[in-house]
Image (cartoon, rainbow over all chains, first blue to last red; front, top):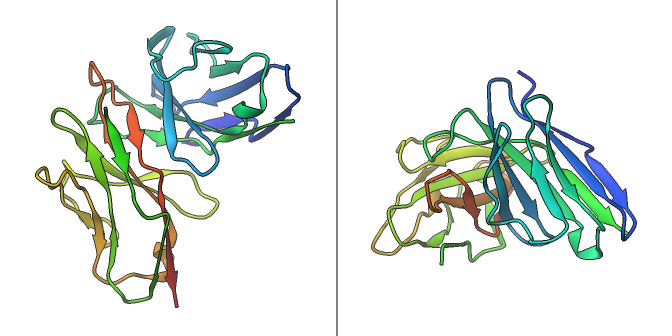
Length: 115
Length: 111
């Protein structure tokens, strides 16, 4: 089992462009969490998805950010019209089921730099 | 508000010395507390959780509800313990398992 995969590992975008971050969960996991880590801060929850459903998006900025987890393929975090403040490390984690009992397995992260 | 506080950004100790990484939390309800660790060039991984009451790599953590703390301890630090440590709390409506992280503490174990 290769673990949670994220790509790209590094992404550079100019202000105003779109950023697409991909997360492939571990085999057999149907629950995905996205977290953002701004410089010098801890990870902050953004969104929790199950296959084809957004369950909790309470941590997502109201504009420009969206997430999906289709029936087939990876989960995608999409940031439209990026700004410098979006520069951060974005981590996804997967688990086999939801709730506290189940460990979340983290990917290596995507480091987004907005120039 | 739900919050996790790790007051120390950096903790530096000598090999063989005791280690205590502090974690305090704010949560209305019964929290689930975790410690995650990130070694150099590796991904974030679960170290231990309070419900399992395990000792992992010599580390233990006790949940103190009176002091709302979940400090991570090890009696004798090893150089390979050098890493970034995050305390995390699981909460939120519906108990979805989303994690609330502290800012992290870098542990540096000197030879």
